Length: 340
Image (cartoon, rainbow, N blue to C red; front, top):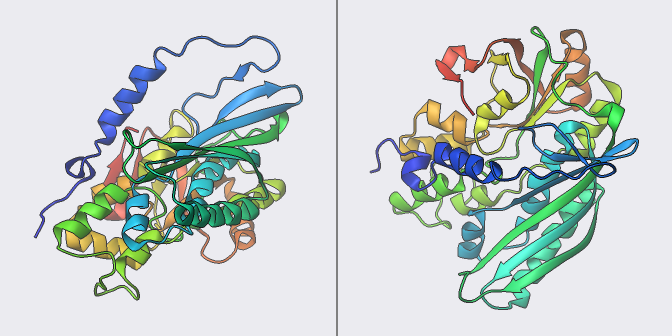
């Protein structure tokens, strides 16, 4: 039985990942001037480009090792939704509307069954996001890839006057959580290692779950585009965060000098409790790796919070508040994060 499993022990060290990103970004100094120049918003969820009265947004992401679960189950029809979701949910964090997408598949050998199913998911995700897939690429790389990898890039647009940066967040503002659909597409390396080290297969049923554990892990990532853009059109939304890799640590990115106290965390779905028990994973690790039932967050003035929650619909709730701090805390659980 594994003891005290962590993401780092599973093979992904998020601190080393951050330092590797810094090493790369340190060389990226050239900037275009004039029309099409970048709009400086460091550390946010998407890049912004000056386009007259508008800003274009551009971000890229993939599905990650969730694809290994799909391969094991020979079920690839939902991973395209994950690919879309991982990009569009970042895009909307600044109030930008996704408008176009390109996908990239690297595969060891052409396989019509795989690509057909992937296409079904991509189409479904695009429809959920009201966005066109305008192109893509399939690269056959037998000496480089085993199986296949799936990633994409999303183009969005927002009026410059409507960009949501987090700068207007104030102490006392309410933090609203939107429910996730499950594990989404982050932390799958740790989840898979927990399954494997317990001698389980993805088709196995585990106490506490209503279906095989592999299907729980394959549940598609929630797409928040229509809901969030509807809310930003009606309420004074001051900041937003996509709760992906890094868990609650994503909230640190919103504004320097502002932290959050989460007094009423969302209830995680059963799959998180099963993984935590099987892997004997600490609460501290769970909440900095997984979304733990909260897939997206919005910051609004306290006076708007109740109306915004009602408009957000089923499962949305006020989970905490902003305060002058450099950390994210869940006092009732003794959790605190002060570094992204």
